[in-house]
Length: 184
Image 1 (spheres, rainbow, N blue to C red):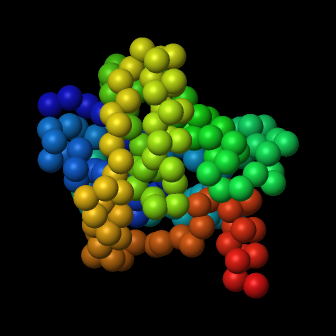
Image 2: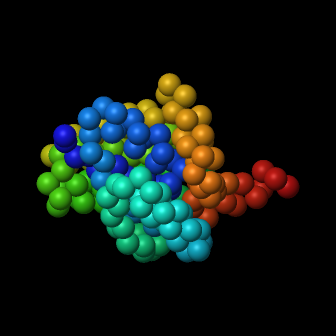
C-alpha cells in the first residue's frame, strides 16, 4: 500500500477524499497547513475538528504550523482579487509547496489536496499549480477532482454523520469579508 500525503483544509473536506484514497489502495497521511485561515480561532477550530476525526478514523495527521504572515506575504497587493483569482492561486501554491516539502521529507512520492472537493474552487486552477509544484519537488501529484461523482455531496454527508463543525467561508479574511458583503 503506497502512502499519499493529503493536504487538508478542514475535516469536512477530508471525509470523502480519505475514503476514496483508501478504497483505491492508498494509505493517506493528512497534512494540515493553512496559514490563510482567519482568524486564529477559526484556524484552531478547523484543526481540532480534524484531530477529532483523525482519532475516530485512525489516520496519521501532521500539523504544519501556523504563521499567518506566510499568507499575508503572498497576498500582498492581491487583496482585492476576486475568488478564484491570482490571490487564490498564490495561496494554493503556498500550501501545496509546504505539502510537497513534507511529503519529500517523509519519503512519500505522492500528494494531493482536499481543495478540489469544494464547488467554490476551480480544480483546473489547483491542478495547474500542483503540477508545477510536483515537478519542482520530483513528486507525483494525484489529480483527483474530489467534487466529481457526488464527492461534495458525500463529504457533506460524512460531515453530518460525524457532527462536524462546518465553516461558512473559504478561510482567508478576504473571503469572510466577501461572505459578509453578500449577506448585506
